[in-house]
Picture 1: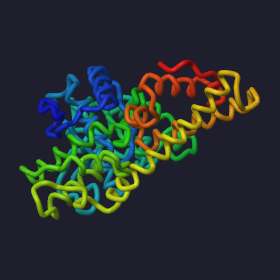
Picture 2: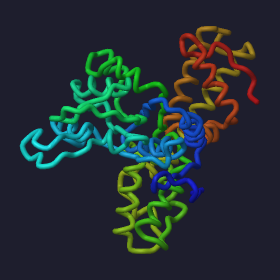
Picture 3: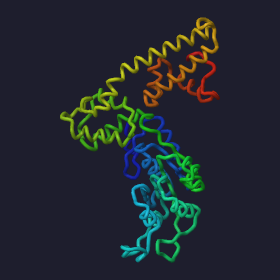
Picture 4: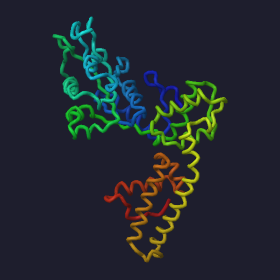
Length: 352
């Protein structure tokens, strides 16, 4: 469903799937503090929406919200945007200009794509995070601000820090609390309401057919919400009828949907065969009572379950239905794989 009360700084939010509801429940808990927040997620997954929610749930909600995409500006402009400048600081600086930190005083500043920030500016940013006042470019008077920093990245900052491409001390200062935004393929329940929301925005009164919506839900969405929005916009512009059908969707989505039934049938038959072999081993019949055969089958089962999860885009309910097991059983098996030191469950409990 789309809850109209879920709108963060004018950006509507769809909070249907369990992963995204859990994430926003965590956001609401940590927002009341003043800790720096680092948001990680794939491009287009909704990191800015999460950052806006941090601000809106916080005690700073009535104060300014300021955002900057660190990758969108040339390096020589980022510093002047962040810290401001005085008149005559450089060619073209005809008047003094406050920086984003001054404009955000008392509120929140959102630094998107923080992993692309120049290493020299990282040092200056660290000083501000530690509470040090700063100079505008060309300035002689220090400026003090009270700003909460929320940063976002689609890169692995910890790995960049280990390789010396990002200051390790800044990483730990930014990552007082880390939030991970799940990709769209891991929250399939959000696809339909998001698609309808975007369609209503671009072409009110139009709808997707049930088959077209199933096709959208079966797609893996490598470009996440941004890709979904673009697909809906394309359909809204090009579809000839008010009801958008499967043939109105891009060919990549049509092809994935057309291949879905056979792929699911093959996976289901293979899983049944593996389970039959496991039952023989556990009952003491077949496979020469061989423990090695049992281990091999357990490994096959693990790989197959992971393959089915990949096929369903991480959607555990659909994966369980496809495998012919309960959601609880699938969750238990995944816990076994996670807990096992070598990644293979060494024992199979009875199915619920």
